[in-house]
Amino acid sequence: MILGIALIFDLMETCLDWQSSITPVLRRAMYATASDQGPADSMEANASILALEWRQGFFDEIHSRSEAGEPLEDIDATHERAQRRLLAQPKWQSYSSLADEAVNECVTAWHKQKGTISIVDSGIHVNRS
Image (cartoon, rainbow, N blue to C red; front, side, top):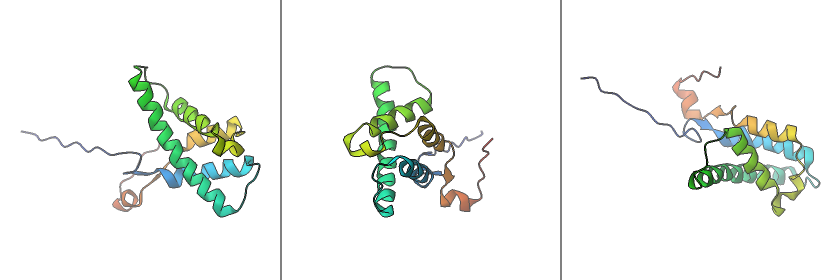
């Protein structure tokens, strides 16, 4: 008898360090468009908060579509819609004019995440092709 073993990873935290991959891209886009940039540490905090809210908005979008019985869609469309909804909120209005190019760069960053330290240290290699 052959026993099968399945490993399931939460690719949003277990294997991939999403926050340190996404936050710098958001910060660059925010610096480029902010009407009032403020202190650098404030911009860093804002980028981190926006990243967290964007991730949650992404999951909310997926849940809403599922609850409504809507079909699956391209993950990039979901990320873009979640980001644009956030940027339309009053607290993010100084960043609402992000150019399409900057939005696309932020969305693409979800596909270029760094591995977590534990995965990198384990010697597991990810084929990115």
